[in-house]
Length: 287
Image (cartoon, rainbow, N blue to C red):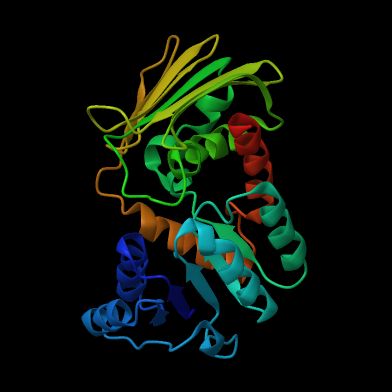
C-alpha cells in the first residue's frame, strides 16, 4: 500500500516517520516548500509540487495532516480525485462541512479519521468493561496548546466524545459549560446521557500537568485507564483484576496498520460517518 502525506508539520512528520518505517510512504506535500523538502530529504522520499499531482494511480491513500481549518478543502479535492484518506481529527471545523464530506465520499472513497485513542491498549483492551458502565469519566487536560486554529473542544475533547459515542451510541447532552479566552474555548465540560449510561467529559488547556484518564463504574466492576501512560485495569467483583501495560505500543503505527486493513479488507476503523455524530455533539457543546 502506498500512502502520500499532505501536511508535514509536527504531527504530519509523525505520520511520515511511521509510514516510512512500514515501507508505505510515497511522497509528501506541504504548502511550506522548504519544510516539505526537509522532511522528504530526512525520510528519503520525494515532494509533490501540488496536491493535484497526487493521483489514485500512484497512491492507495493519502494522510491529511494540514491545519484543521484546511482539512475540508484539502479533503474535498482528494475525494474528487478518488483518493482514500486518513484525515486527522477533526475532518472539518463545522458539522455541515463534515456532512458534505460524508455525502461526497459515499461509494467513491473510504475516509478514516485519526481518532488515535481508539488504538490505545488502555482503552481497546477493556471496551467491554467500559460498555457495562453506568458512569464513565473522561479527563483530558493539558498545560497549553500549540494549536492556533481551533479551541480545546476540537483539539482535545473530541477524542473523548468519539470514545463515548463509540461505546454507547445515541448521545443526549444534559449539561455543558465552556470557558473562553480571547474568543477561543480553553476549558469545556459536558454530561452526556446514553440511554442510562452517563459520560462526564472534561477537557482543558489550563492544567498544571498533562492528565488523560478514564474512570468507569458499573454494578460489578471498576475500570480505569491512563491514556498517556497506555496502561489500565478492569476489576470485576470476585475476580482477579485484569491489567494491561501498553507503554511500548506505537499508537500511530497501530492506527496505520488498521487503516490499511480498513482500505484493503473493509475492517472496522473510525470513519467519516462516526465523525458526523461526533461533530453533532461538538456543535451542541459550543453553541
